[in-house]
Structures are given as C-alpha cells and as structure tokens.
Image (tube, rainbow, N blue to C red):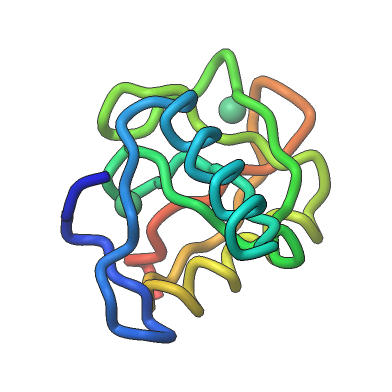
Amino acid sequence: MTYNNCTSKRTGDPLKTYFTQSEAVHAADYALNTYQNSMVPYTCEDCGHWHLCPESRHTPSQTCNSCKDRNGRPKQLYLSYKAAIKRANCIYDERGARLSVYECCHNYGWHLTKADAW
Ligand SMILES: [Zn+2]
Ligand SMILES: [Zn+2]
C-alpha cells in the first residue's frame, strides 16, 4: 500500500493504492476477514493502479482488448450503460472526478472517459 494522488471524496483521505491485482485481492481478503467489509479491487482510470471499492457499489466490468487509456493500459469495458453510469457516479463520489460514458466502437460495451468537454 502506498500513497498517491487519488483521495476519497467522502473522507478526504488518500485512497489505498496497490500496484498489482494480487496485492489488491489480498487486501480485500484482509478487509473481509478483519472488518467484515466486502471490498472489490478495481483498476483506477486516473493513476492506473488498483484501489478497493465497497462491494455494494461495485459494477462488473471486463478489459477491452482494443482500447487503451492514456497510461497505455487496457480500458475497463462495462457491459451495460447502467453499469458504466453507476461506476462513474461511484468515482465522482469517491474522488470528485467527473467521467462521461461512451460506447466502445470495437466491442459491445461502454467506457468511461474524463469529461472535459462539459
Ligand atoms: Zn487512482
Ligand atoms: Zn473499447
């Protein structure tokens, strides 16, 4: 776990950041065993690393094999528009970052992108 620039908008604390999926999964297991908190690891669109999201707020996604983010990592692909919106709201809630949803032109699904157009 390391400090980085992503902070929780709800608490103002830096978000816990993990560099590998297994590190994040391990931390999620620990939270579940220790605090009975069900947490789901997700890759962050901002820093490209891993954070944990409470399971109740998690939206399922998979990796798009055609689109990459500006860090050169595969983008998360949301299988429904609703799931993408829910995820965007969750990110706005946590970090105050406004994201907009657009349809992937290669696969069936939706992506999130920084909403600098509005
Ligand atoms: Zn981040
Ligand atoms: Zn895509």
